[in-house]
Length: 170
Image (cartoon, rainbow, N blue to C red; front, side):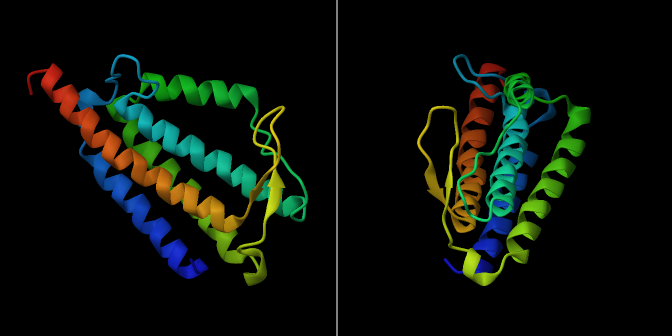
């Protein structure tokens, strides 16, 4: 996909997620379906974490000049993100979490816009975890994964809202 079209779709995907998250009742923000890792409000925490992670991937790729790199997510950040995703949000945290997402989204978008055109599809070897083999990753891949990620949680949140409502007689 061409960069401008991909960025326009990246923006559309974010808006789809924002609209879906607006449908989450305040009382459901901490709802955690048995066996799940993400509460309803925790989906927003998770979305923000994924934006942070992939911003680090992009920054690493660019800093390494498209040589082999690793995102280097600090373990404490990973732990906080996982705990927050499980815990969810309090109603008073909703607005700031969405503002954080908007800022993170804009940073990723800006990084992509500033790339020379020839780097849009250029691959770098990225090591995503200790002991893993490098995975060829381009800025185009990252934007595609982020678009898909927003949309994955649109459907998931709708299903969880229905389950929460059924469990609470709403």
